[in-house]
Length: 174
Image (tube, rainbow, N blue to C red):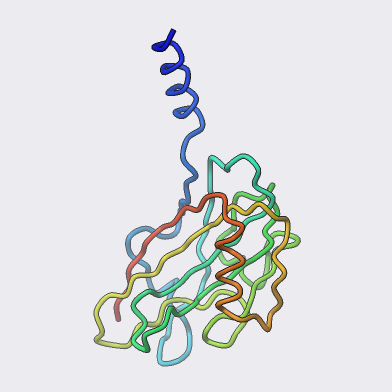
C-alpha cells in the first residue's frame, strides 16, 4: 500500500509539471532588437515574446518583470513592469508593449521614466549585464498599485501574493 501511495504521489507531481517561462525571441543573449533606444543606446527597443506553461492552481493574475541585476548605480534597474495580467493569458506577443498588451494588463513606469518596455542598455565597455525576465503567478486578480508606485511597496505586494514564479536569465553587453 505504501508503494502505491508513493507511486500515485510521484505521478501526480510529474503530471503537474513546473511553471515555466519561455521565449521565441530571447535566450541566454539579448540582441540589438531588445536594446533600448536612448541614453546612448541605439537599439530597436522591441519587447520580446514571452509565454508560460503549467500555470499553478489558484492563479488569479500574473505580473511580468524585467530587471538588470548588474546596474552600476547599485540598485536593481527595472526595465519592464506589467501587473494585473489576467489569469487566462499565457503569452505576451513580440513588440506588444504599448501596442497590444492583454486587456486588463497595466504597464508601469520603468527606471528610464517611460511606461512600458525599456530594453537593455548597459554602459559601453562594462561587463555583460544579467537581465532577468520573471512571470509571477498571483493569488489576487489585481494589485493595489498605481503608476506612481513605490518600488518597495510593489515588491512587497508581488512577494505577498506569489504562488509561483518562473524566470529567464539573459545577458547583454555593448
